[in-house]
Image: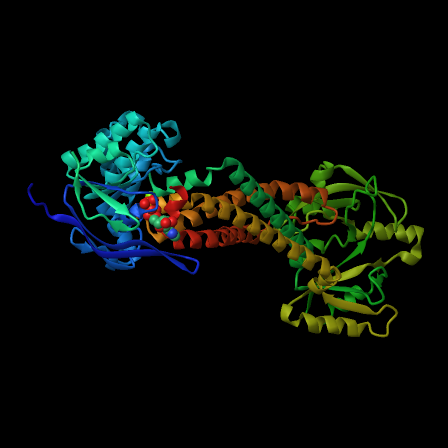
Length: 233
Length: 385
Ligand SMILES: Nc1ncnc2c1ncn2[C@@H]1O[C@H](COP(=O)(O)OP(=O)(O)O)[C@@H](O)[C@H]1O
Ligand SMILES: [Mg+2]
């Protein structure tokens, strides 16, 4: 196996939440490297801290201590505003419940992240079309989320996640709400993003079939990352 | 798609809720506008009155007369430019509920002292040369369908009998604030009748209207007039027309203040309603705001969406409210023309409508926007995930 450069480097990460006067430790001393162009699955029981870890990698939550470097940038040292700007171009999100904006069409939902770029209207249109073509939904671009099936909505959400061409995509149980056929479509699509577009994907999942698609599976248990790296199929 | 489109789509997402809120603001702005118009109508007499005109009346009461012989004496007082006189006739047109302020005036000088009553030269001339002529304001002429040449009969109350007049002129007000509901005719015509029927009431006038050369010296002229008639049979009180009108209005000051307060209370109530709507809306959208933040939208974008939505709703209501204010004020003004001869929506009222809507929109958005901006993305996502 050739050695790839690590695109994500996490060192001695601790994270806890306060609930009233109680402090709940969620992640303890996580150290993790994720190679470029990797497709990693993160598994573990409910409440083990998977979503929390994903959020920290994506820069939407703050660590207590430790560092998270993405493409060589330590994102724990960025301010809120810098972080927001960083997210818009470096990371894409895929959620369990798709989380599309209901009043916007598929096209407009995909266009949303591009509004933060300096792209012209025409350029945006081209990018959105291309993204929708990759997820095979050009014929549904004027539909509203409520007019699409779960699988179709998730494909729109995926298009929204990569339309601004981030290197990393994070997905929190992307197939958790889908039937088997749709789930397979989504997983195939994510695989294509890794192979054809060179993305790095970190995916939280409960589904063993989903994990099979990944190159690597890591297990999180009570906030601790299991030492063994399990290579999938 | 631009952010503006999202803003518009968001605003009309809950059609019923938004419609009800817009409707509420429409009604509030309408009520505010009408109440403000009532207040300004109340003061319209004062606003329209001139500071260069003095009114000289009997010191005992306005209902007591003054001798015609005072005219020349007043004219000779230094500072007096011109003089005219009137008398309240109190005639009734057909029925008592048709309230028309009607006066016997000195036809030769009336338009000199009231330049704001605008008449064509021909009509002015016709009026002057016909002893039984009368002139009516545009508003009442329209209301009763009078045409030039019509005979109008007033039933006298203070001066008994039926009095026929020929309409020779219809005047327009020079300003929006000018009263267009008055009716006047030749004092000479009234006086001739009095000479025949009750000679002791002849050669009497209700009050004098005195034009001064220099408005700054109006008080001195007024004092000089009153001094002239001190210890005579009929002593006088002279004041500016403004003070004279203000005297009527100040008696009702408390009501005006109450109306003003109510107009602002209406705005405060709608502010609470609007704030509630925005709080509900923003609470429901917390998840969406978290998604947008995740995508890289900053605090200003999120706050902008909430403030924008609030302002769109407030200004939509405001626009409907202003649009409704004009016809409503016209209808109200027509129905109440007896009490408010001038009932115009003033441009200041419209500016205040807009300012009130701006404040309502901003205030309603402050708290929800602050919450949405402060909320951490992780918390926001948990609510939907
Ligand atoms: N914002 C938060 N406030 C308080 N506790 C939280 C918060 N987010 C997560 N937790 C707690 O942290 C633990 C891990 O949560 P999470 O990362 O969502 O787990 P998973 O995704 O593995 O199910 C849970 O016990 C959860 O209750
Ligand atoms: Mg989770």
